[in-house]
Image 1 (cartoon, rainbow, N blue to C red):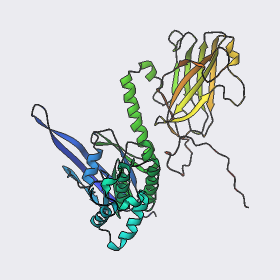
Image 2: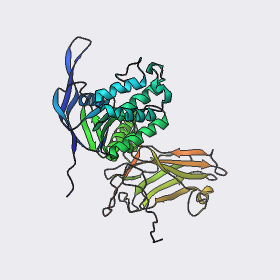
Image 3: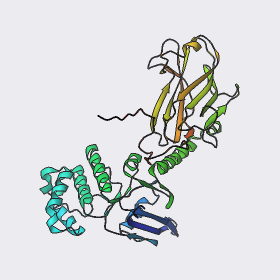
Length: 422
């Protein structure tokens, strides 16, 4: 039987309301948080995401006891250290070492541990001899590095961070992320707010999405982040007023499949698109264990020109996954040559191998190049289709998932492995 996990934080029905005064002098209530509940266990790392004004900082301020909730409660089973504004409570006239001494005393650290703590904080912050200089002489970067180094080296069971993982330069950020990963592996619980998908994806094993003061979704980062970014993508597209015919390409089962009459087909004087589908090859929804067929029917309207299809594939976070190009094929031939001196309808199919894409949401960005002579990197674009072509790849029913975290990449090819005694 699995050992019960140790609870570090239990949040029950947290709410926070404010009275907002209008320009006319009337007062109305504003609910910044509404009935927030969740539990964190020892070693959990939870990233909190949400648009500006969704209640993220309000939640952390309540957990850090900076403000009191209107309703509900948060119960800690251990100690917690918060970094809401990097550098709070640092005195500019005192040296780095003197400021660290104060913070160590406030945290309740044993005096005989101060020397070791100073060595770790000074080394991690990379401020060298400036450690014994007044911090008013520090650059902004040095000040941030010291303040962050102090916070993450204080002895506590839980660390609460509000958008402070971007302090310092790239090298220092990488070192901070490595240390936070080590801290989580050692059993420290971490709760942090971030607008960076990469940070949440890399560090967290849980993700909490706040929307207008309420929990929109809580779960694995790959699931929550995917829905969060898809909502923003949909909102962006709605603002651009994408035409209804383009939005209709994704049907209820998550595959692309559409046929156009010749007089309504999208295109131009060089070509038009009569059919476009992404499926398992038999018209069904793409499956991770089966080849994925991207099929199109092109009506070529001009002789003497090359028409070359290619596409970009993006994941649920709208990050690039792969590029498919007609001329990059295992046959090593210019497949478009047969179309050059003719016109008419052609079926073009590209097959993505089975066991390649992980299950999830993808976007197909379809393009067609045109060239009268030979292809080169400045060849013109004949036609491009909507960037809103979404489809899903389902998990194969009998697949055994022993990893449990699909957020570390977009491809999962079936690779050749071997094992033998040596």
